[in-house]
Length: 331
Ligand code: NAP
Image (cartoon, rainbow, N blue to C red; front, side, top):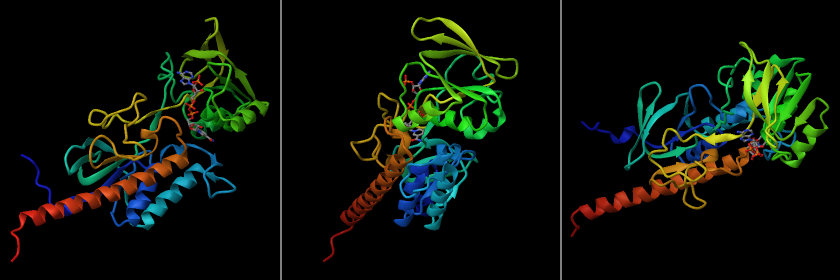
């Protein structure tokens, strides 16, 4: 039997995700009196910036700001305008139709006229033997969380992008030496980050190399390595491995209901946030394979909020027109 939904149980907008995209969408929709419900996640509220240190390039903070502080500010700003922020996960969504259904980890169900998907992206794994087994025992995806445990140790970071440079630089505060293992001989990182890493005496680059295995009995002790130039095998003695090889969009919850791009991100209509289903909008890394900055995610959250406002106004207009058309003409 279909559950009967009373009008006052249907929210105008539910936002799934609490990074810069989700919180910005929350600030805008709250200020538009749409009383957004934000599903911020049961464990990881605040998104990836909660795992970072200083953010130097978010406009408005000339001295920089710590990632977690920035996210707590955004959350407070959204709350100030009445956003209902819940530390809950969405475990299932039904996005077809005019009323969307979102099942919560706690077992409840929310109904909404519109949904903003701002689920971000997840750390990529190497997919080599030993990686999963030694995760938490020397293998990590978060230098700010785990760097402290590697005081005076020799460790490695794999990756050649900004994240790898940032992780490596941060880890030099603790480790005695940090190898950066990159599969090519040129970095993908921005010039400023690359220059900083290259200038740091504790960092040594291992070019044209990939990690083939993480070895150790209960704790990382050695990496199996292979040259990407001539396939020569070697090994490297380290007690920690930080993996910083990018991210994949988190689309698992809704990938069967919405169109995706070749990159696996959510397909949206041009520069809007409109996905392939009416009333369903996307914001942040989940739709962005290229830019992936805190500020672009925040901008994208703003776009989604404005699109939601227009969508709800348009659907309210057409509902009113239908009601008028159904009424007998007055004399
Ligand atoms: P990214 O730019 O996509 O870089 C990923 C790196 O990992 C690349 O060097 C790539 O190698 C390597 N890689 C990918 N898959 C691999 C595999 N299976 N094995 C070995 N290496 C692999 O990702 P990111 O560094 O996470 O950065 C993402 C975005 O966030 C970027 O736009 C970046 O600018 C931004 N970001 C900015 C800052 C900052 O400004 N402070 C900090 C962090 C991130 P190839 O180069 O060969 O492809």
